[in-house]
Image (cartoon, rainbow, N blue to C red; front, side, top):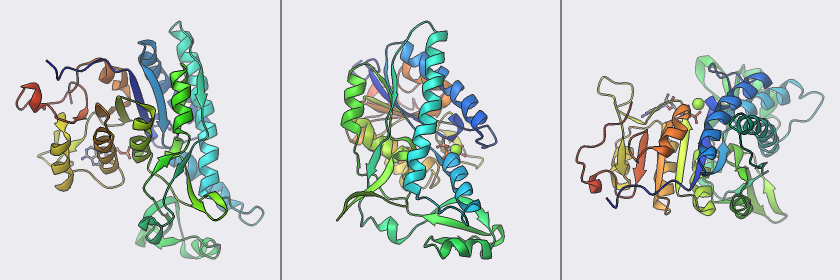
Length: 336
Ligand code: ADP
Ligand code: MG
């Protein structure tokens, strides 16, 4: 009926850490090439079906690597900002994914231009997150090691037995500055990679736009980027088939097709952990609230299936009205 989906025309895919690192989370150059080759295959399946695909991605392990280098070389070369780390990882991940996609297209017998954009995301200079940095990044270190970075102006926090770890602000993304460019490139038939790592965080200052030491959640940035691209669908590709209610308890159950109102209730009940599933669910809901047709949270391998199959059959799906309006009461059993 009217609830039945039109075809997915333009999808923004947000790739999680497992698409860019080995299963154990390590992110050597070869680990990243291998993981992105697999992701590239799934993306190429979708692109080969005529869907416009824009790709965004995380960068946690990659920035972690750069921070380590910063720290080990602190006595000979001044550490660079998180904004610079973000810019560097957009380039290395973009490059690796461009190669992976090109090869995957060739294997499937077609060709499409791929472009990767260095992308900035504007955040508010007075975002409350700057006054209360809570996002831990990089390695744990002993207190005396941490002190040399604290002396450089960084904030580090005592995590007890594990040691000290740097904490940074994770402000709300307001605007992806290169979104109009990304849209024009997608309209022109390019596969676009944009806003990697959530975009390089910038704030408006007296000197113009400047990078800031912060990290932006890539899923929340995707929720801002998607509507600006005219994407009808957002797919958040991670390492679980669906969001789970009562996660980690005997009552755990996969969540299928739900409405914006229903997901709000589940969020309020605290089903989705902060820093992992929480921002994914919030991003998926925000995308639909901003006019997107559907947002899907599922496993990377199910990417093409999720776009191909009727809404609600794969993963956790959020639409404005959910499954109820499709005259299928209790129809929320997912594939998982
Ligand atoms: P990515 O690296 O793909 O962005 P994350 O590791 O940040 O993914 O988030 C996915 C993880 O969230 C899952 O592997 C799982 O461990 C965790 N998680 C926390 N709460 C839930 C939940 N309610 N349902 C499913 N997964 C959850
Ligand atoms: Mg992860």
